[in-house]
Image (tube, rainbow, N blue to C red):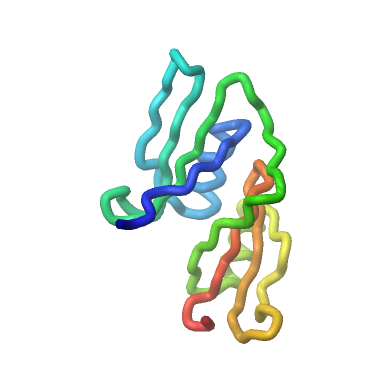
Length: 129
């Protein structure tokens, strides 16, 4: 068994694809419209679905925003340098919500950013775990 994907419902699919591909450097792997159900699925990631866990962005055509609720936490992405990654996110218009630095009670360097729909994304600096 392996983890295949995590699904996020998004209010503006084009805006979300732009964020994940342009700001976070992922690749749009496939995108399919389902007119009968009035939704579109877009799969994005850092590698092919056959070998990598990816994100499924679900856009329901008649919904422009979602209440994020309290159950979902965040997506984690390993980065070589959390400080530089946050600088690049800012340069590209993204929002950093927790500056890079050691995690409480640990030497692991983390940071948090937010996607256009408000989902939290944690950067974990590789080699500091």
